[in-house]
Image 1 (cartoon, rainbow, N blue to C red):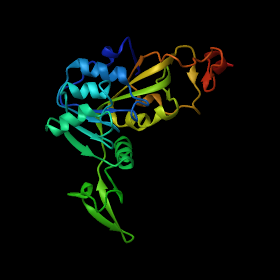
Image 2: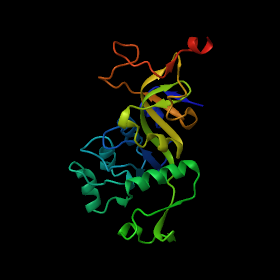
Image 3: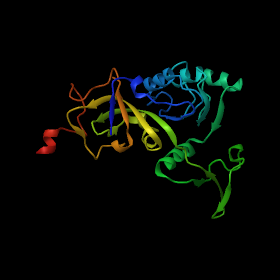
Image 4: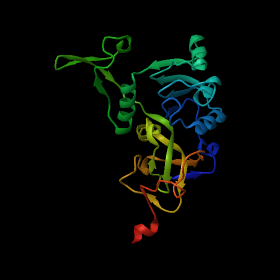
Length: 244
């Protein structure tokens, strides 16, 4: 059953030390910054974080890393021009890193959500990333075994949510959110808008509400809201329309 939380801190109740946390976002696009800040305020330690990147600047994921709460990060792009927080932690041996090619990362998370025990991929064959992995030759080509990623908690950001927990995203902010929502025991979503009178058209839903446990509304300044001048009402049905 969907729980609508009053604030981001309420949405983080019950986070345990040692939890594995999936965090959506491609750089800043789709990053659930308010949820990450709330996770930081819980004081949970020894976390394993799965994200495409390893933080930007001093905010969001980087701010969480700076507290020393993250024991290990699994990501595709750990180094960027503004990844100085992660760089310092890694060079000083205070964080463990597992680098996973981006496609493999996405598929490992998807496999975790789909209940798949593993898959073989040619990506990474013949590189240090294949060390210690099972290798199988299929149709004359070598493949390495990748295992699924599952988590205790997923933190994602979406554009709009209805009372059933169904989600739609905004353009590239969609990135890892849909697959992460399926691969965690508890999925927490920050949304720009919660539809209190109506529901999303099933044909437009990206993440079904069955995968969403908690939602908190975080207004997103500067965006056109449905119903305002120029607002986009596509994909929104009212109860009145449904009963017609």
